[in-house]
Length: 592
Image (cartoon, rainbow, N blue to C red):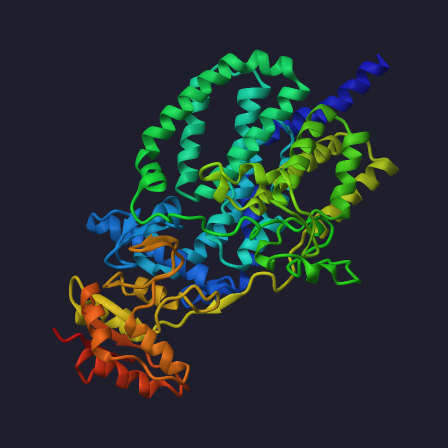
């Protein structure tokens, strides 16, 4: 009788908690907490939603802003949202090799249409971690019964070092990390459990793949690699389970592929064979590899940094790609979960998947503190696989973070149901240390003031007229700080004109790879003047601009630029006109 009563006392709180967790208000409360944390993270932009953008690398944030506006413009005018000649005119731009984020553009379209693309970008950045955390909480519902455990782990995942790193550079597509939780849901549903509705599961997963295609295709490649690793781990550790699940898994796979290819046939065509795609490797294979030291030493974006030797300052890549920090506290928690924790049948395969992905994230070399220690790593085997070979292995860090968050969720779930002993308080204190070790630094996410010349918001659409093709000075470049500002001007004009330049990944006549619009003779003359040299013959520049279809030149004067008057003289010589001031720019119609 005493044992039975003890069992009732032990089980009843768990049953009451589970009953409460079925209430919709619990998940809503979790989402609101995540929103509060996200608002705190992005607090610097809240006072300037329409005049500043998140991320010190403004070229990337301005690029996303451009695509958000392009989607609204394309839908409203019947244009193709995934292919455009509004950059790199007249040759065009393949959106599937860039960042059109049509899913997010559709979600934020009302904001873009009413408040502008800058506000839409900033709002989407704020909502990204919230969506990621809520997705994690939902995806792990059957693996981790208690909402409090999933909420703590979901918060860790939503604001993990990977997300903070990419938030710092304005990577909108990499703060919306809902795909790794979707992978967890699919593996749990299709592999770990008996799935009574495999066709429905596959169809839902295919829909998720299609949505991720509309967010960022590289994350889709990350998921493909991760699924292969999961399949290999399960096949080695639980071959009987895989054998039992194989028939239903095949049904899910067929359903998934049918839904995915129906929804994504055109995007896949653009990706694999469409015009304007890059025709050679985008980056060197060793350009985006994780630094192994980042596992123990955080980047400057982390608040608590126990690093007296300054190893974090010597990591490979820049802080926007240094998102692999795990830290001693979380490594200790994982070790304890593997050895003395409960549900090791869940923790061990998850930890093994994470460990394999860590090795793969190192890329083709093992790099420690920016020094190559091992010249050949397993990732080299994937370099020649179509599309996967273009993937940046460092991006696997987000799936690693999801695996670690799942282990934390299991740890907290077990902890909640145990009596308050000394060991319990030690385990709870370890959770606190883990959370504290991943807190972002106060200045982790900065903003950039983005002034737009009044001409583009006030007069461009009326003055330029329909079908205008404009060459702006300065032109858009890939310079991380301010290089893509002309794209922001174009977006704020409501896509009132096309431009020959741009900041993108693509190709052009005689150029198998372009990372920005090619410099024409007019812009080469501007560069020469700014370098203190003489420009070339104006008639050559005029002829090339006409061949490109340019109808107007817009010079945006820059305060304190000693070359400003010479640039205006050069533009007069090329255009054959004296130019006329309009608002705060000088406009030149290109003489025919």
